[in-house]
Amino acid sequence: METNGSEPYHSSLNTGVAMLSRRLFNSCRKFISRQPKSDPDIVAQQDRLLAVVDVLEASSLRLGSTSHPDYYSILKVKQSEAANRDFSRQQFKTLVRLLDPNKNKFPFADEALMRVREAWYVLSDPVRLDKLERQIRGDDVSAASFWTMCPYCWYLHEYERKYEDCTLRCGNCKRTFHGTAVNPPDSESMVEGKDQYYCYHMSLPLRYPVDGGSRFELDGKKMRIKTVANRVRVKGFVPESESDPESDPEEIEVEM
Image (cartoon, rainbow, N blue to C red; front, side):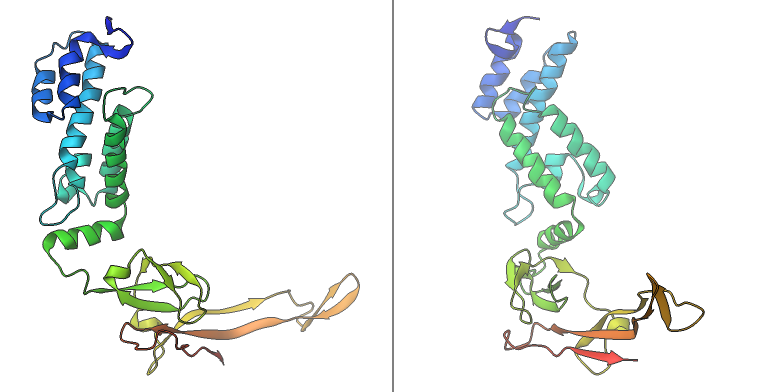
């Protein structure tokens, strides 16, 4: 196979590479379609060149009235197919293979690979995908709220949607955490008449009793069994309407 001097692609693709360098995507695509398909090595290079062209052209498009690139076109999936994570993953892997920087030496291949990874980052996550689709529909996402949980004290918080994926400070333990959206508390976990919810309920024996009694033997010594019996911890949550974010929600323990 004849190569273009020190360039890692065939000399017959010089014109297409020049068009790509000038970002003439449509002209480059037409050039590739007119090339012979007799040599498998050249065909593989044409596929890599075409992958760069398709991804960069798709990334120049916008989704509706938003500022987001057309992630669907970048991964070559229809909007109705985006929820099918297996299909989206297959498209993602195909493009990553074509844009592999160890094999694809065409101009802007690294930029195209970055765009593919950005599209996969959004479309592969149900929360981010739902947020994107609501923005496309024109829903007032900024006015909507979302629930998040402090991973240190388990308190639930409700914030405006614009704070999603931001660093937040818990009003209870005062520690910072990543504002990842979680499901809101359901009716079954709520404490009736209070802005609180049950976060766990368990009974945990620490040792098995001997002869049905309340003691056990360890190295010849009789020890008393200590258990946590039917203890319910109740946590509070901070609603969006709470005027003072520094106030501490009530936390109580109830022995059943």
